[in-house]
Image (cartoon, rainbow, N blue to C red; front, side, top):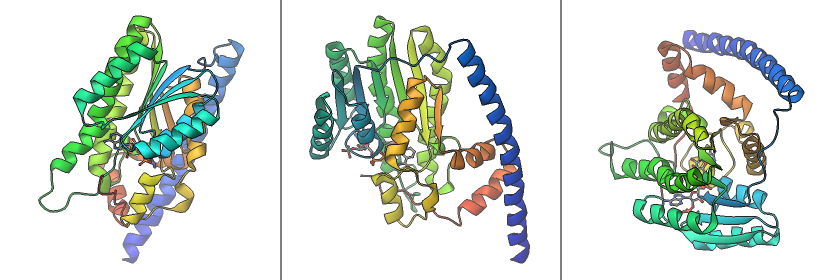
Length: 311
Ligand SMILES: NC(=O)c1ccc[n+]([C@@H]2O[C@H](COP(=O)([O-])OP(=O)(O)OC[C@H]3O[C@@H](n4cnc5c(N)ncnc54)[C@H](OP(=O)(O)O)[C@@H]3O)[C@@H](O)[C@H]2O)c1
């Protein structure tokens, strides 16, 4: 046992040294980039979007983004299933002067989602779509592997996103402008072993966004992938309720998260990834040789991160 603990300690120290070196290097590159962008005036922010559609806007990050974007002469279209919660967010946004409409839709109902998105984009001409709705899932129990629950997770987290953005991007293509934000997760870069389905669904979004961004750009559309670490929302609370152990210092306040996201979208970042304290270890692990990743997984299993039973 003592040997394993010693290996763990050496491994963590090794990770810390590499992380510091890497962080220093990246900070240097970013500094130079900022200076070059400032000098050549390349830092022009994306104009404030006037018509914004957000899915999963009834709680958590989606609701906070809606409130942050709410201002006079801005139209918000808020989509989720729970109308009571949507009405509450609508009221908050209207108090800030925005015009708001809500729509109750289940993201797994592909036909309904596609036809609503087509209709609303024709009527409103969406400037920014944030495909944010998503669910989590506990590790499958015996006999549950590749079950209906896994199918549903992918229907909501992956196909729900595609069915949301595709009709709107079609409209944006004709208009020659628009912005698309896809909500993935740090789990999409390297997941906890207990969240393998969730991680796989979010990885699909990271890969899609990375490869599709230049294609979208050719049509005048800005495409960004959002990869948050833990953010204090009902989804994270469900993880705790299901027995997940989340270190308090690593969970970000939802208002702070929404601020990082809106700032990143304003700058047209390819990827908005945060907070740094979680990003660096996750990113580094994803680039390391398989035996180190295996050790990481071994350690991660000591800190179970049960996802919620999806609702
Ligand atoms: N919180 C985190 O730590 C974290 C980290 C990384 C990524 N994310 C991602 O951020 C997104 C938002 O999550 P959150 O943390 O804000 O959790 P949340 O508060 O549980 O929000 C999830 C939202 O998605 C909606 N939703 C769920 N299933 C849906 C369905 N079938 N059809 C339509 N809407 C549905 C929910 O609304 P209804 O229940 O009313 O339908 C709710 O508005 C998710 O994609 C999540 O994976 C979260």
